[in-house]
Image (cartoon, rainbow, N blue to C red):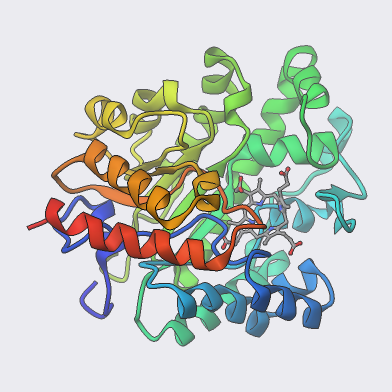
Length: 354
Ligand code: 1CP
């Protein structure tokens, strides 16, 4: 870690002492930044941006030029894996992601390949290498993937969903088909994240955005079980450096003990749980990332500082906290408010560290 100029984020994940609490923002590169919109316009569309390593690097670095963030996150999307499996990802203006060929039968799942990241996702590894080179050791680079369950929701629903009727139908009417799909996805995610690590990702995060729509038993069966397989299959040390893994299940606050038991290094928290309670429950096992409601960024500076101060006090003294939002930054947040947030975390956290 010594080659990094700022290793606060990695140190916090390993529960080592830091001078102030590290901070980054989920979706820190994106449409709330005018410079992102300009680069995206130049690229043509979102996938053109993801598949062009120079432009993906440019948008990864944009938020770091504005704010003193303690980590960079690869600019890509969780849906690159299903796209590489042949589902045909596309975006319609004003709408979320969609697939030309969603999964609708057992045969579709049987015909689905496990992705070889070097073949179908080489552009992501090129982006990782380009970003690492251009970061010049300033801050660590986070690689990421979607969880098998969250990826499966998009693949079976054919895009974003609110009710998850198709995938739940598969879960209860044809559980073996869903398990085969989740298993192929878990194998693909392991290969994909390990390829990102080999290309230069210094930490990895698994986004389980939709695990929280499952019952406790089904969360274990259809989501957590496969994330556990991923944690066990990841490269945890690369070229002498430990590679931390963070699991984030939105609305997963009731399952923290089970998530910590997977062997991950850190748990990402959304804002529906009090961070003091989370720390009391699993703080001896894992580091915690989170957990300000992203909507607080609409508030005046004083209100943002109050919220940051409350979360810092909730975590209290001791190591193992990476500050973040509890979910992605909203696209209509004024960039200067994000700046107030980052500054507030650094300024107000100093008394909590020696
Ligand atoms: O420019 C545009 O119009 C595209 C908007 C966009 C962006 C900026 C999409 C489409 N993806 C991304 C980038 C992205 N997505 C990143 C990297 C940028 C960063 O963090 O700075 C990451 C980590 C993601 C992850 C992602 N994509 C998740 C998991 C995290 C989460 O926010 O819950 C999910 C669920 C997606 C799917 C997806 N891709 C894009 C959109 C709009 C969505 C969400 C659709 C939905 O709500 O169902």
